[in-house]
Image: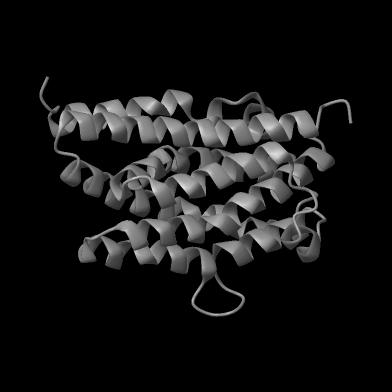
Amino acid sequence: MGASGPAEFIEALRAQSQRYHSHHAFHVKMNEGRLSRRQIQGWVANRFYYQKNLPLKDAAIISNCPEPAVRRRWIQRILDQDGTAEGEGGIEAWLRLGEAVGLTREELWDERHVVPGVRFAVDAYVNFARTRPWIEAVAASLTELFAPDLMATRLAAFERYYPWIDPAGLAYFRARLTQAPRDAEHALDVVVKFCRTAEQQAKAVAALAFKCDVLWSMLDAIERAYPDSE
């Protein structure tokens, strides 16, 4: 069977939204205001391990990618996370979110709250980007196709249901409302352009499914570590 046309291929990629972690019970509870302070703190601390590893994942994609035009655009993701100076970028914004929910920077950086399942999932994602063909790693990033809606919902939920969180700490979510669509559009263009065969397209869809599993597994681990009863 030959390769799908661009529209059919994009539809297959977008169909993975049904696997996205926005459907996870922990996220549903978060967006309905049903998480405790401890659960919010646990999520923030564990998610920080994912945030701080994103530049390593993106650097791995760049190191494997032979296309200068792709590398020039992709490096913006690292700058978005690391910033161009001290005190800037997505990692800094997440540290401020941690402070807003009552955590210290030290306990975020030293990973004392990171549970094994989250560490395993994040490390698997970074290893995927390092060892798989670069276009598959780009395809895995396409969960950003589904992120803006979740980010907007999350931002509204935090503002409505968790007034104890300093609103200044929500800057990361606001920034991603514009960054995620920009990044997703670029990644989608790249995947459609370079996945020309049926096999490449199938591997791209599988890579995106893998990334959905990574995010879902993280929430499974967090939910177990921070149950409702505590």
